[in-house]
Length: 191
Image (cartoon, rainbow, N blue to C red; front, side):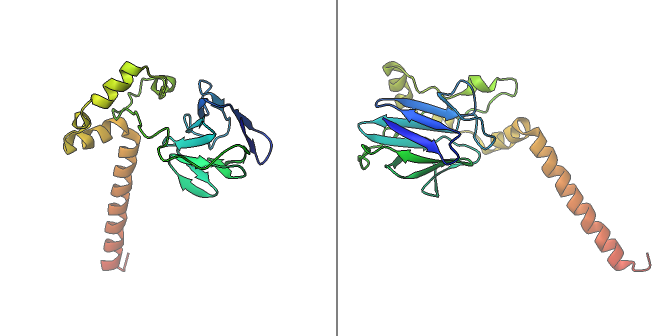
């Protein structure tokens, strides 16, 4: 058993041998940290054979081991400092040993398809509880199935992030207008 205790003593996480836990801000996560710097799905933690492996799963504010950012997988040892977003933990696991050659999260199962704006966030959560048949199917699917036309990705950018697209467009128009105003004032100092 390994315990992670936050430096401010607000959070304590206990991980038992054989457990694989999802840490995040959503109530559906195994470990719920109600801090604004924690992503809805922040990281996976797995304790197996006295090896605690942690993978950041694309969190907004990142994860750090001994003050160095990582995305994963990383192994932690007794006394290490572990940070998720702005929440810092000290690892208490005297039985933890150095990492093995092959990390338990060496195969990542993700979907590269964009999330529909009408979808609930909880419905997009990664589910690592795959049966053996699902694992075999995901390993045998061709890698090129996700490749697309570069033009399609530009169209998807405008559809998936309309606010960002509008902001960038407005910013460019503002910059061009400002440059034109400066040019006009420069050439007509009597104004």
